[in-house]
Image 1 (cartoon, rainbow, N blue to C red):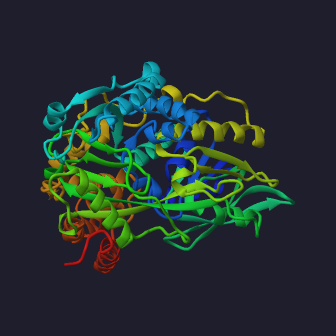
Image 2: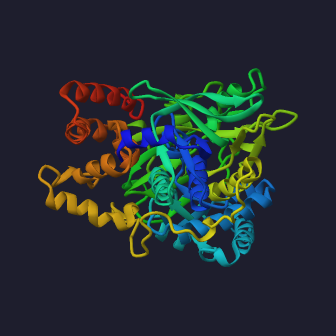
Length: 520
């Protein structure tokens, strides 16, 4: 990815669509717009999926809880989109069996009936039928589940994926269809001709260079930062976003040794909680905490950590403690502010809204990873109308994403998320001096993945590589700190940077990583 070449192109081109924000929504919009043949530019102030989109529960799901809340239309939409994600990205999305352990006589029949409705709603895109499990079957599938009082369980199917790898794959897909994307390029102002938006002013965060960029349409897909862009358009407008924080803890595989996940349908605060196998570790979460201020590096609160550990301990034979936590990460959900009275964050719909201002700014708020494609389709349909663009149908329903490959095993192959690019990454390690061998044998991360991240995937910092191109920071924070100097050295070699840059990068990464593990 020649950054200088892209920067020159950005300024010379009159774009059809500028998308601000490189998370799930913005990247989905870039794929949709580019695949329809529009001149598409996406600008991200930091790194792709740096915020919410790399911090999910790693689920591609219809949302059993939304069905319970009566949000039937969202469940229908999400189940359809879940099926399309499976078909379009088989190297990134895999089927995951979930078990609801039941500890009262009515729980089994109650959840069995509810999940049959869930299966029915998925239709032809279903992943397999749900069914009741006896106590013995539940223990065989979940040998570490709390057995005292266990009556049985209910098993159902949903999806699981690697969120930030999906994000970078969407970025590559957009480029495959002719889009231009730039990370570390912050939009600071909207351009207007009279009252109508005609583009944006952006600043390259590496050089400080300011660029005036012309476009027929501007889309605000910045998640929890959406209000900041809205203020550029309409200063003083009431806030549209309610940020809600969710945290996750990473435990080692011994807490959930088989390939089954646990779903707890009712925690003490009325949420659901998951323990899900992921990259030979276990993701446990999440919480739903109203947050006043948003940031790029939200920090898990002690009360949230205690809540997740305590709830997990109620369903596992072995009570997890802080010493067992390999990584803790927090993310902010960009929930659309509910109209009228106040609602608890867990009650706010995860559906998306598309807002169009008087000046023509399109803002997408709300939504969830599973429905990213539908959100993008709806948004680009509006952009076509607003910008007077030539009408072209959406083709993303059946659009294989970059690297599409059917024969990968996302459960057991660490390079599965790269799909067809896997062979080229292996070739770098075999054919180029200095790139052979492991970066972290413990987590099965190769040095050649660093080269690939810099050359092909826009990686500019150690954090980009260790948090999002690979998932080391999210899987084992201490291990990420250990290998950070090696990553800085390898990146410096590829980017032509000096020792000073390496030291700065290591210091910056260590500052980020200290919030991902508990100090001894």
